[in-house]
Amino acid sequence: MNGIIDQHDGYTKEVSREFFRSVYGYMFAALGISGIIAYLFGTDKQLFASYFVTATGGISPLFYVVVFAPLLLGIVIQSAYQRLSLGLLMILFVLYSVCMGLSLSTIFLVYTDAAIAMTFFVAAGAFAGMAILGYTTNTDLTKFGSLLYMVFIGMFIAMIVNMFMDSDTLTFAISVLGVFVFTGLTAYYMQQLKGLSQDTSMSGLDRNKLALIGGLQLYILFVNLFLSLLRILGSRE
Image 1: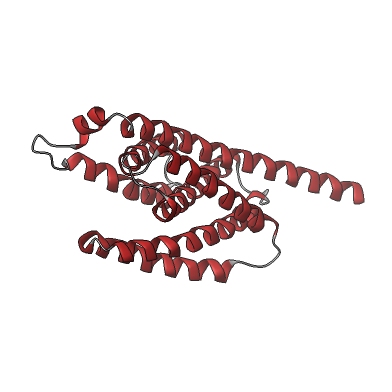
Image 2 (image 1 turned 30 degrees about the horizontal axis):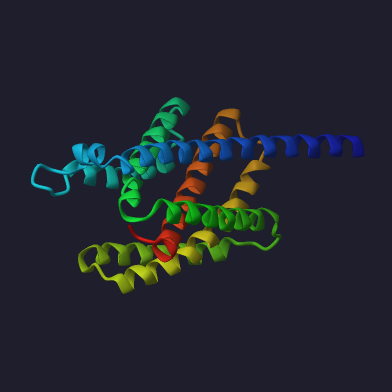
């Protein structure tokens, strides 16, 4: 009996490790795609202007499409993944990463390279710490995650309002709050993903799809944590 239990535990652990390898593979792939695109467009002002600046010097409609496309793509991926094939999900995932990279290219026009690099490593350290905490803690973070979601909705509304107000004070307040929200949600999501990874009843296809969703969620949290910290710590050009 003990041998059977040990074999089952060993199988569960191996399935869990494979799931997380896929999750982090998707996350790092998205970061790599976005990072390369952002650097190429952000460090070449002529290239950036050729796509996103009109002849009169204004922002082109294409830029707004790029900025808001990830929101739509994220909703489609996470809400319709059961009906979509894994191949189509991967195409949408790559498209999401490209659009995010194009959107993130603007940080190279605003902040110094040193500030971006320093903030990236700070964000990576904070993200890793909270991911480990979320994976190892025995405390149920469900209520904590629900509360953070409510705060995030308030932040999102405030960000939209601030697009018209352009208040530096409100931007700073949202950024500080964002650091706490996105680090907290990282721990919450890691705990949720840990539970999914140990579910051996799922089919291989469903597990692959959920690994992609998990990688996307962690990628979104990392990018938002990075941007929140950059607004606080970053030195402008």
